[in-house]
Image (tube, rainbow, N blue to C red; front, side, top):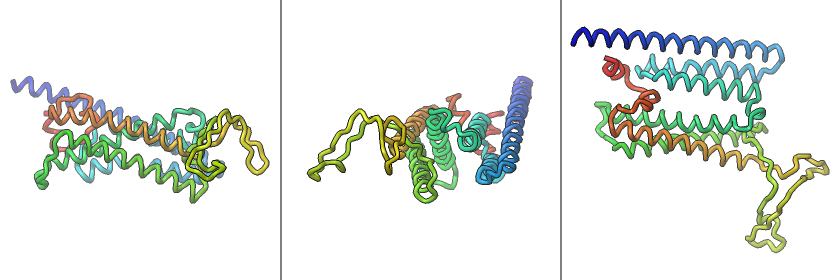
Length: 271
C-alpha cells in the first residue's frame, strides 16, 4: 500500500511540475507579447495604449500575488483562463480593436466574465464556510445563490463604469447598436404615455448630416442589456456547477478546475 501511495504521489508531483511549466511558458509568452505591443504603441505615440499595456502587465501579477500572500491555491485551469481573459480584453479587444472587428468578441468575454466572477464569489463563500474562525455555514443552494449574486453585482458595477467613462470622457465603451425601428412616448403628439412606433428606419440625419447607417443609432442601451444577459448565463452555469460540487463535496471534476482552495487543503487532496 505504501509503495502504491508513493508512486501515486510521485505521479502527482510530476503532473504538477508539467502543468506549472506550461503555465509559466504561457505567462512568459503573454508578457512578451504585451511588452512588444507596448513598445510599438509608444513609438506610434499612442500613450493611452501604453498605459493599457502597463495595466495588463499589472493584472497578470494578481493571481500570483493572491497565492503568495493569502496562501490560496488557484487551479491552473482557472489561472490560464484569467490570464487569457485579461489579454483578450485589454490587448486584443481594446488595442487591436477586436471589439469592432469581431461582433461577438464582447459577448464572449462578458459570458466568461459572468462565469469567472461566479467562481470567485463561490470560492470566497466556500473558504469562509470551512474556516474555523467563522461560525456560519451556508447550504449548497445558498452558496450558489451568493455566487450568482456576486457575479451579477460585478457585471452591474462594470456597466456603471462603462457608462461613466462614456459620459465623462466621451469614450464609447458601451458600443452602439443600429436598429430599424423604435417605440417612444417622446414623439406622442398629445403628450400621452402612449408610445409612437416608427418602423423601417433606413436613414437618420443629425445636424443636417446623413449618418449613412441604414438605421437608427441606439446609444449603448441594447449593448448593456446584452452584456448583462450573457453575464447572467455565465453566472447561472457556474452556480449550478458549484452547487453540485458542494452537494457531493469535491467530487465534481469540472468544478475542481475553477474553485480555489487553501494551500493546505490542496496538498491534502493531492496526497
